[in-house]
Amino acid sequence: MSRIIFATGNEGKMREIREILKDLNMDILSMKEAGIELDIVEDGSTFEENALIKARAIAQTDVCRAHGDIVLADDSGLEVDYLNLEPGIYSARYMGEDTSYRIKNHNIIQRLDGVPEDKRTARFVCAIGAVFPDGRVITTRGTIEGIIGWEERGSNGFGYDPIFYLPEYGCSTAELSMDVKNKLSHRGNALRALKEKMFREHLI
Image (cartoon, rainbow, N blue to C red; front, top):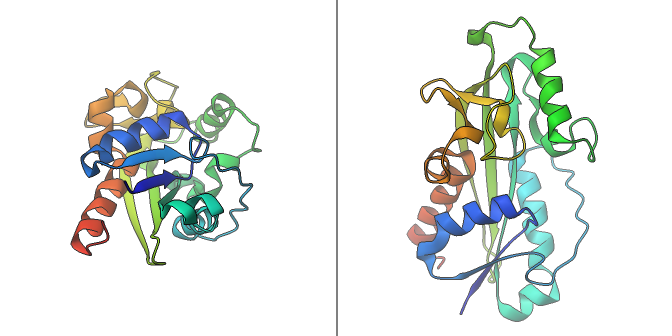
């Protein structure tokens, strides 16, 4: 059976990925589960470039070549309009790689202190790069629009979810149920676009 290897060790991401791609009827493994350990330098200038850097590096490993794996990688982040789209592609490394998201979230809230709601607009962006055994490559992008909240709320998410507020739902993305979050999320949107593209171009 063909396998999909996703370039992450993040269990939160893997749960979301498996749920959205479950109808492909393929084994979906994280790098760790596939026995792949790589230190990949993400030095692209866009989310798409970084996603493909990761996917290509993993696709070239002996493990993936031996199994004929499809390799997916994402690069995602938060863009805050008032902060000139920071932290953007540096979202994971914002304020240092080992800095907790609680500290990062509080820093963003502090930088927006006194900023009115209509200027707190932000979005989550996710680009997914896919590398196929025959060398073909595709990318997709998904986004979700919202605003930066005034405090951390919710425990159903990770990263910047507790400060990313959806006015139409009256809550943060960390307060959404997993089902609703999967339907709305930037990663969910990018994964669904990828799945459609894979079927349309007969890649699976």
